[in-house]
Image 1 (cartoon, rainbow, N blue to C red):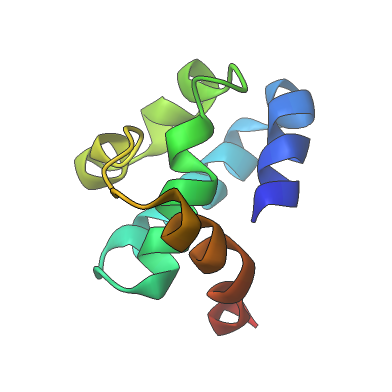
Image 2: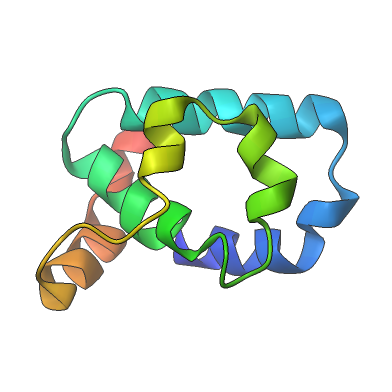
Length: 92
């Protein structure tokens, strides 16, 4: 997830509207349930959208719940790193 976040920060402005809609839909599905996948997407991408200057690009395609996840909300950075590195096998 963190590699995609870096990529999206560099290339997100080149994405088509169709691609942004698809990505927004995927992210919305990922954050719909409060579980490890939601945590990984939130902490590894959504919380960094402003830092990578991609919030304005993607936010029109995100649900309200996903937009709320663009702010840090977990107390432990160690836990967040672990989630970023281990929770994503669910996507396969």
